[in-house]
Image (cartoon, rainbow, N blue to C red; front, side):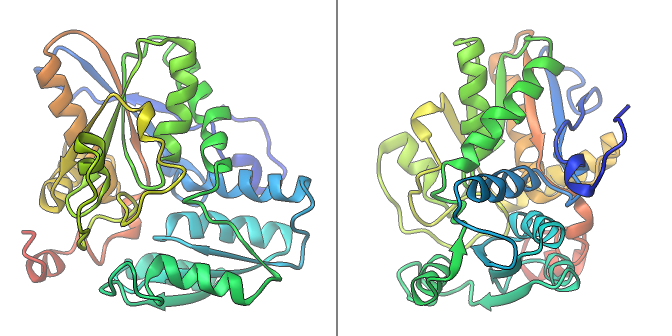
Length: 324
């Protein structure tokens, strides 16, 4: 049981790990899931939001009253919104117009200045998701641009929190860690810690079709990226936080498969999650079948399904996008 906390920020981290007995039925390996949706903002990104802001404070880069800027698919934005409310910062978030309505509404309720950009713009366009935020930061030197995709404090937060938590909760009995690569902070940060504890731990990345990471990891080739529907994983560019050299393998997942396994997780384990978690579960089962031996596979339930009732839990949306 948690001890008493003094504010909501004290409740970030120390999320539970559960064994997925129904999902892994018939498999020799055991699949364990770290329930990151139990952070106050409903996702693992609360960890990096708090860590990156507090480190910037210690280094004298920001102070209460300043404006923080970030581009986010919604979860880092939500984590930053909670931190900003608690610490007295203004917050501007650049977000794609395909992001779920629930995420956007939650940010607005928390007083965030939400800037919607066209998700269909090519990566090189000056008003695309990544470029818009970078250009806005250049135009406003008084904004503090978090830049989670290239800020290695992202990885460091998971190295110092998520990795040690997994090691302790699993009593050191970890064989594989499976996680989607968005910024890569979770898998690369926590994974680095776990590999230092036991070099035999294997790290398996998960990347959506349309993202560049899978092909670059496998063949060192950069493909022309295209849009996909699963939120929070994949990217259009190589980024500093995605330290792919730490990974042992990577799987590529289709949107439809990720969403099917998201619903399977809800139906079989009673865990309501987002699409990236479905991708992680699919990859964990795929891995368990491939190794066909006793092992402990740890994966991440990245965020809560309540953020996706208008999309992946909405049959009309699935039909419109040929995903049903």
